[in-house]
Every structure is written in structure tokens, then in C-alpha cells.
Length: 155
Length: 255
Image (tube, rainbow over all chains, first blue to last red; front, side, top):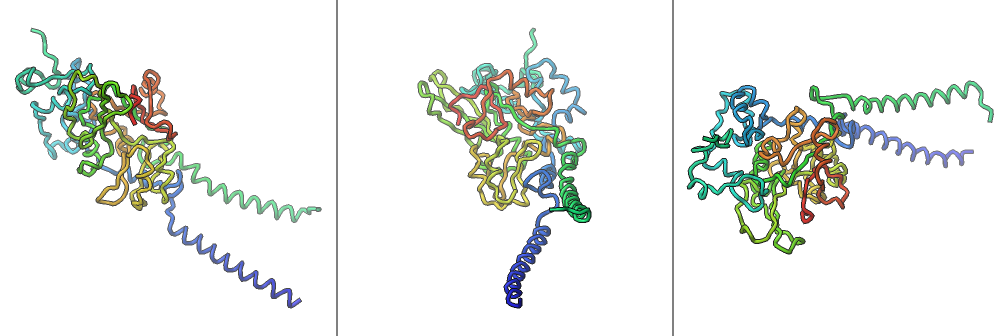
């Protein structure tokens, strides 16, 4: 009988070591893994919020039209009607938050138009392209065209 | 084997105890679909994608500049979340396109080719394809890069080790290591904007609407009509990445 007990005892020690090791693993894991890990998948759910935290640089056209309704409306029916403000005026979220904080610079009419309208082989053929030397002897475009509604009126 | 009432109750009690413990553990996952951090934004209501109309892209580089400004991408010319490539197919050689992308198209493109040389030329804007089955997510050893429930591939900067597995795994070359943080960086579909109801910075400034953000879970989004009415192609379809940047009228020579 005593002989049987000794055999059983060495198994108990093994089990005890395994149980302690497993408990230690559970405790350490609970301490290291954040609570929100695995809520949506194999990642920390808080990372979604981290990615949301970045401040805006571009305000979006809706914010512009809150104050500059007149300019937005002046484009109606023109070729630039659907071009949003910040495409030419640059990122202006700081200005939209507080107009006194950032005074937008007026785009240079000699270069801003050419960003899009300079002729290039790779541009779609239907897109209006203009060689400024040939077309107007390098005069700035706003000499004749209104940037917000560039089509020239007849007469 | 005869089971008496006492044994049955003890056994049944144990099963109940384990089942309820498992159920309470699962409850947080059930609630997760509804829990929201951004007011009015429900993760499960969106599945973001983008359409790029090759026939509209004029290579102005507005998207590249806006992306760098919006997302504080390093200004050096080899870090891009989005960039524009110019394809040049010489006459009679449609299999070997000449591709260039000076500074990612940040300053637009200088004309290199002569009209009438018989070549085919077009621009291809590129960005993270926000794959539904992303190779980059599969290889991340620490769960730092992941598919969000609304279909955007994002990076957890606090978890990223900078091991570069994902940079190599991405078949589209859309990832880079930010030299300032030494963590990986990539297009987030402007996650800080789209969760506030705005469009991405690149789509905001695209003058021809060549690139438009779309929400595949919104039945009234224009993306459904766009996908229906155009010839649609994704990049590297043979890799079965489930890419969600849909190119309209893309030439077969684009890699």
C-alpha cells in the first residue's frame, strides 16, 4: 500500500507544477492584454479611436459654404461647379474652425489653373487643356476668365 | 448505469454553471456591435470602398498633396499613402508599359512624350486597396494591423513593432515605415474624416471626381450605380485579396 502511494505522489507534484504554471500564465496574460483586445477581432478596439483622433486639415466643401455661400453659388452652371474649394485653395480646416486663426492665401492665377489645364499626353482627351503660351502669351488666366466660373460669356 | 436524482442535479448544475460563464463571456462580443465611440457613427452600418475612374484622372497631384497635408505624411518623396503613376505604352508594345511617378506625382507630371508618337498614356492613382482579405493583416505577428468592422485596414501604432512583415506582404506596395515613429504607416481612408461624415482628403480635392469614396452598405450610395455601369477591375485580382479600390476602365497593362 505504501509503495502505491509513492508512485501516485510524484504525479501529484507534476500536476501541481502544471497548475501553478497555468495559473501564472492566466494572471500574466490578464495583466498584459488590454481589456478591449479582441472585442471586434484580433486587435485592440481602442485603436479605432486612436485612428479617429487625428485633427482635420481639410474642412470639406460643406464647411466653406456655411459662410461663403455667395462664392459657392457663383460657380453654378460653370465648368468648376463641382470642383470643391480646397482643390485650389488648399487645406483650410483651421480657417473653418476660427476664421481669424488662418487667413487663406489667394491661389496664384498664373499657376493654379495650369496644375490641371496644362496639356499632357496622358490626360483624357475630353479634358480642357490649354498651352498658356499659345493661348494667351502667358498672361495670367484671370485676365479674361473668372476662376470660379471660367467660361467666357458671349458678347 | 443508474443515475439518481442527486447525481443528476449536481451534473446538471455544473453544466449550467459552465454555460452561463461562457455566455457572460460572449456577451461583450454581442454588445460590441452596438457600442460606439463616435456619436452617430455605427461601425456595422458601413463598408468603405473607393472608385477610381481612369478616364477622369488628369494627374494633377492634388490627391497626393492633400493626403500628405491631411495625414502628416513625411515630406520626403518616397513616403506616400497615395501616389499617382503615369503609364506609357509605346506603339505596338502593350505588354511592357513604361511607368513613372516623379515624387509620387506630388508636383504633377512633366511631359515626357510627344503627341503623335502612337503611344497610349494614362494616369493611375494608387493607394491602399483596403482588402477584405488583406495579406498584411494576416502576417502581423502582434495584431497591430487589422481589418476594422467597417472595412478599413488600420494600424495600431502603439502595438506596431516595426518588423516590416506587412510592408513585404502588401502586394500593392502601399505601406512604409514612418522614420519618425519607426512604426508602419499607410492609408486609413482618412478614418478620422469618414467617421465624421466627411469624405477622404484625396476625394475632397479631386477636381474631376476621378476618385470617389463609397459606402457599400449604404443602398443609396452612388457607388452601386458606378460599379454597375462601368467596366470594373481591381489590381492583382489573381491574389484574391478582396481589394475594395475599384478601377473603372483600367488598362490590362497596369500591374
